[in-house]
View 1 (cartoon, rainbow, N blue to C red):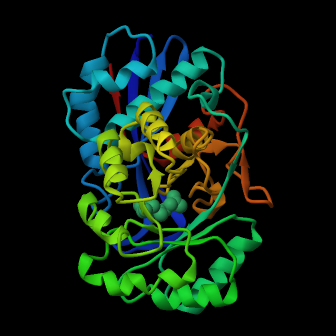
View 2 (view 1 turned 180 degrees about the vertical axis):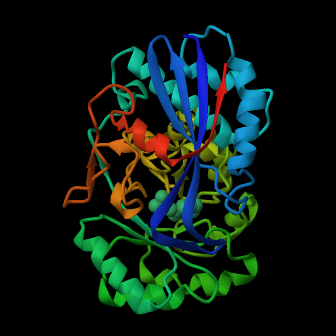
Length: 368
Ligand code: OSB
Ligand code: MG
């Protein structure tokens, strides 16, 4: 295949909820969309880089620059066999995985459409329904939190994740456990703690959490290995795992028992597959994380969640939790039993609403 043209767009979308984590709050998203044209089809990718470099070093601005000035020139005018080959073509650029994933995943969608098959099948997926959980931002009060959890459980979600930060962890967890002794519950700290907090983190052990996600430094696998030896709650790494070698190191050091997979963080669908296979071989379950994606990123997440070792509910939830109106048709919906039905159409399997995308676009650049 050969990519004839790429269009980059920035869209702005206000969120229907305010999403607060230990590193800050998001109310409006700036999202880079990537549209690739190849052999009569259009493929779509969405960049998960944030507005600020607070979750990872990348931002929408850095991703735009790297994609246009360094990644696109590597594939421009070149003939290659498959989206599988794209990651290797980017090897001159260190890091910038979210920029790489945005372009690579759009090419996967295009390839699946050329072959007339669903993306999830092209990726090697094995299931037609995926389990859905929710990630709930830090709430102003414990009673706000309880009301939010109540609503999400009523909607059917199979697992509740709450964001925590120092001083707001034991009390919320205690309150939720008192109210719902058996709900599948987990916490995500987004790197807000240090090894000085071991005694505090140990206090979470009695609550039977499924896992604690990324308690320590965003790039610090070693300290997580030290922590995991001293707490019972399984550690799940998110921010720390940017590549295959990190997953291998984390597994061999015992730094985690579970890995959160995000396509943007690891550099695309091929890398998701490689890390997934490594985890599977080592008995480490994975689940699909979320980055407050609009419909295209959400659809890519649904496709990768069909791989065999995605055995735990992910953070991939219904469009309406985030947006008044999504950019895909149909929108992503969750069934009363907390699942998402995987679409059967070609590529990502959802129609991109071009008119809506055009209306939301504040910047656009054609790469030819
Ligand atoms: O740590 O998983 C995270 C959102 C933005 C950045 C980091 C994270 C998150 C979420 C939200 O937890 C998941 C979602 O609902 O998309
Ligand atoms: Mg996380």
